[in-house]
Image (cartoon, rainbow over all chains, first blue to last red; front, side, top):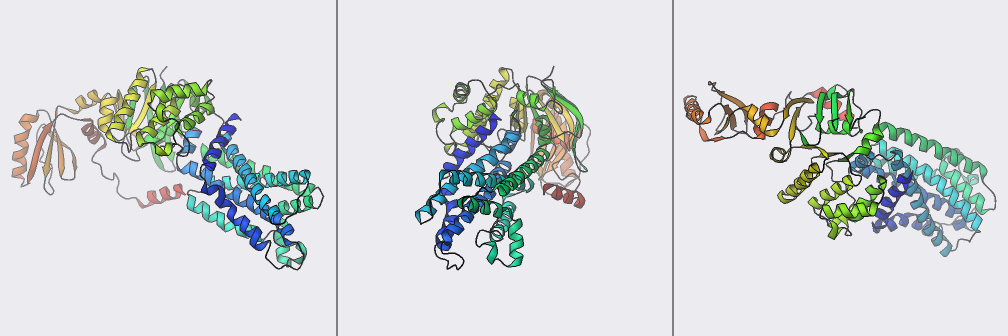
Length: 241
Length: 318
């Protein structure tokens, strides 16, 4: 498993040297936080920022995870994957390295969004609450990056990957509990929001902020994450020999 | 034990036979697999480097079976694909260190330093690869490939897209590696390079090995002299004793002759009689190009356009 570390180091160096990409990914969630979180006139709560922040954190992780699939896509297109596959190191290291790197990179981006949220008025929580929030976001990150990586293995070119990516990310966000509580949703949306994995993560973070331990959601995210990672390994083994 | 040994190695993509019962042994030499595009060169290399399973047949690399002992096979070889895949946002040293660590080399930093020096990259090792020329990038890939002291090196089109000087440097290094005891298996389109730098070549077409031997042997087998005629328009093979047409493309006809000097005037007469305008006639010794054309045939689409095959091909790419 030592290969995982070296693959992660490679991706990390390439990421921080990309400069523009480090910040561009943060613009969208920051804009949501500021322009929607602070400005939208909402009746069901007088602190919409506190309500929407968990949703924005999960959104940051979702876009970090989904866009992370491009890493494997480009390794495949540019010939890196073939070079790595010809190495004696376990081939799955390539896959685990990608999933872990994308999740950790997402957590770094989440941290910046969290700082912005506090700067514009979001309350500060206890270290235990932050620890649980990070755990939930990490599990969610594994789930999305494993999914995106599997997609990248299936699809042939970057364009179709980007197309699928944009096709699913916004609908997933809008059909989750990110923007409004279940009580004010129309019935059809409530059904969608209840089964949407984004809601598991968002509801879990809200529960943590309210002082509870969301065992059901954490268990659900863990099981989903393991299942999708296992599927990813299967697809990876099938396409690489 | 030979470094590379294949027996009836075969690979089908659906109906299409990409490699057809290839039997070959290569050991401590520079061996080139030559063939037109799509002839099965890369498929062969992918099978030998355990990236693709053969449909039929077996092969061993350093005595290890490519099907059952994948990890041992990969431990004894290195593979440099033609894509030039080096990370441009990393330095040369970082690129090389990554591979040294992935291979689990004992003292990765020292080993990388040593190889960077051998490949004349030491002075620029800490610069980003973005600033490297094509030749430097290729040499950096050789550093990556050599970190674990492989016994066999697979190079897919190692000089593709490089300028003349960079090509010469790459071949110098390849020759030096062979002297150090490494078996080198290259695929290439450049006949002149294969002729000058490779010990043996195999010519493959539509998956089948059609010729095998050292360049001088293959040229000698072809015959004595080659005559090329630049002509206008179409013509039919005049059909003369001891003079055979073996290639015709772009208004250039190539003939093999037992005795070139005597064949020249005979050929010129024949053309005149047939009413063909000849712009030039030249006599030379056979090159590997001639061997290639004679073996593979005129470079035209062998079976014409096959609609069904084309569709299967497209479907496979999806």
